Length: 237
Image (cartoon, rainbow, N blue to C red; front, side, top):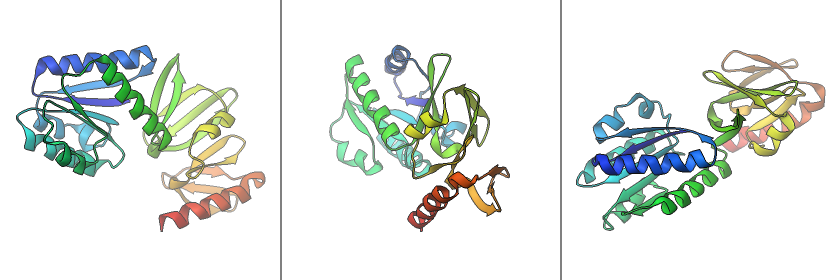
């Protein structure tokens, strides 16, 4: 999981990063947490431009307009991203919620408050099927569901094929199917679960992905695939 923290106060910035990292360390999550001292630096970063952060902590001090502008840019880039405002000011709450912020935290904040917000945020991301957790070397890695092309099972290992790169970990497709969104992901073979968003064509018994791969659709999964895919297409019309 990638997290960005921005504030014009270095002391508060560092304290917030420590509290955030401590929560994830205690719970064995793998994250990267980047800090920014200005909102200009934040919105011009490549990770913001490419919508790579899943969570933002934005501090509101004297730079009210810059913070709200940053929130607008972030929300436009990613409708599912978690945005959390941290401020001493109560008067901006109504304005802040225009940008669909997840939480409005009033300073001073402590470990307990950060822990509660992070637990709530993780639950939201899981419930909405925005992220998928895989466990590698006893650490939980957050995978963006929208960027998963398909899961492949070989022996006791699962490989998650992404737009860029892949993840390998020990599990089974049966376990994956229990967790992943059954409206967007469907099993097509004993060895494959596919993201329907990547399917462009069915040729014979092969599915063609928009990234060029051909995956086999076996007879035993043919009808369930057709039914799920039809519903998927209708919902997107």
